[in-house]
Image (cartoon, rainbow, N blue to C red):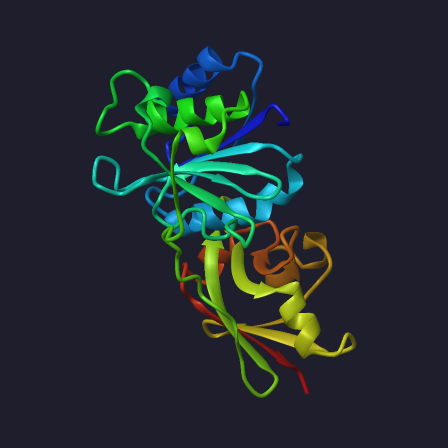
Length: 262
């Protein structure tokens, strides 16, 4: 175990929920190192949380525990999960939030042993009463097999896929960050597999055509829509010193195409 527990939620930081979860974790595992991955997930946006997990987990040391709580089904019959991958552990509701991190090595357990929960489990705050304590016990080395039953049917989200047709990649905006940058589902490898390195490419979004990708934000004139491959290796549309979301009047689901300029 690395001693690290990351936290991803849609709780924000105005309310005490995140602090309470941390207090529960540290009450069980005082030496745990807590990393706030993000608490600004859009309320109930499970896909956004899944994408952030998928792009962030590779940067954590082997043996880290990742606690993710975006849980519109809290209090229902949805399962609570603990997962062991080859290198990492995950604790989350069974609603698709782990879709981007599950793989052929995943051992998935439905949590059922209340010995590892808080004594009284609220129907509205499983982050505090189930997921936080389970994360702490995992960090302390507790085997997942003691916490629940192995399953093979976790919920998997249908994540939009890129379409390839006649030298055109068709994707869409799948996330928008606090700067108004538009992340698409078109990855660097999609571009490299379908276009020659010397190709002049053009991105079409809404009624705008954008040349690129550029190599940095500063290459674009202020206030002008542009694109690049971001640190997560996806095609991102941005507006230097502005918001592409506002400038292009785009949202999650807005179609994006990438073609070769002739």
